[in-house]
Length: 334
Ligand code: KG4
Ligand code: ZN
Figure: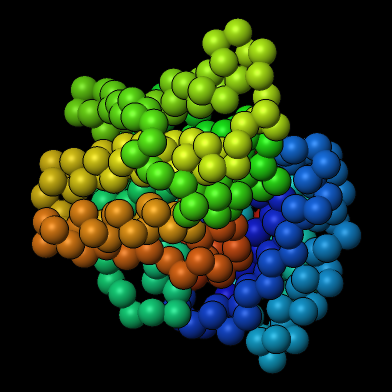
């Protein structure tokens, strides 16, 4: 089964063609990083306008790279939630138009469900049952999965998402946008034990996360308690130490809760998904912690960690087989 997937929930326009839920024939991602960099964050109205401009060329390029036409697809899949409403509407409108024009079934995919499925792309891994950690700019959530679609939320952040914390700390340290990769890069030169930022776990089972405290601790470390200093006055080595120590604390919290979740649900497989799962230290420490406990840990290749349509077309194959086809009246939901 050949599925054409569309993802436009935030600031990446992406179209992918995936065979039988696994084999990625093409995955094209047009990033809007340059567009939003000068504002230090995604500007929703600009993102939506850029999706309109990019959608047709990205789709044309994906079909060309896969050697198919839209008419060859067995279904059209699109992310309809969650995300920025203006951005989602562009993808949903494109998908509905193509499905109507070519008489194809439509699949409405949840972006958060698609992230952990990325471990299955270009691979024959069957990770279920497992615990997944979805760590992105908007989410930090633990799920207990019986299958790719059968997932129960067992932990979440009570304030900021991990990616949001990376982005805010990058801004405090005056690092280039997007923040997560900048912190990841700088942290490699720093000492992760230079500053002992507090690790916390919250909730009845200690499966929930809180990252607002550490963000404030970094702010005071860099700018002083009276906020009289700036990152520009800080020596480069000290900046690298702050980045490394912050990253180490966030990674420790993510790893600790994820292991606790896997142990409490008696599963021996952990999977990661979402932009922050591209973080080098997280990938390293999660794999090592799982190995020590005799668990398997699967992380998507870097290109499928951040937002992409391949994970959407992949999960849509599972949904099609489960009969989960949408009708033309389905809506985008922020
Ligand atoms: O999944 P994603 O591409 O978009 C959302 O669904 O939010 O995740 C984007 C988030 C951003 O906060 C970005 O800073 C973070 O993922 N990110 C990283 C890294 N690469 C992307 N965070 C830490 N280390 C990275 N290498
Ligand atoms: Zn995402």
